[in-house]
Length: 120
Image 1 (cartoon, one colour):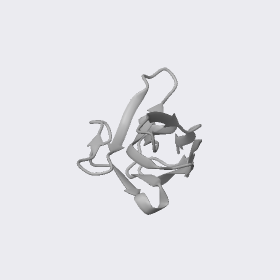
Image 2 (cartoon, one colour; image 1 turned 60 degrees about the horizontal axis):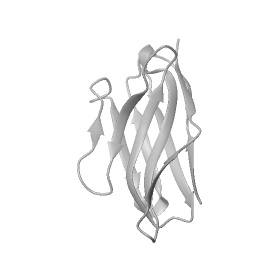
Image 3 (tube, helix red, strand yellow; image 1 turned 120 degrees about the vertical axis):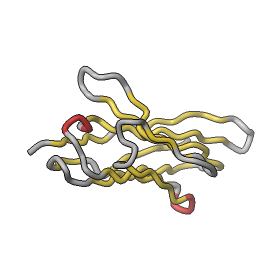
């Protein structure tokens, strides 16, 4: 079994910065794409950023230039550094990963989410 857990959420003032982490643990064989989504009340579920095991990263237009996604494959962890935060960035942020087991089966896993609040 594979577990995904986010950490690092909290309260930050507009213009501030916050870093999120997402650790994958358990019976890990191969982690593929790692993604960050967010859900704010009354807004659509949004893919914020994605990073493959190799290749180019993806950013939503709303965060490009302010957010940076990265990963540490040795630690099975992905990070989301969020700078110049705006009130509209407030949401529950979810980590989502593709894991392929030793039988070649790829399953998508979700973390429980971490709350980010942007307010003065």
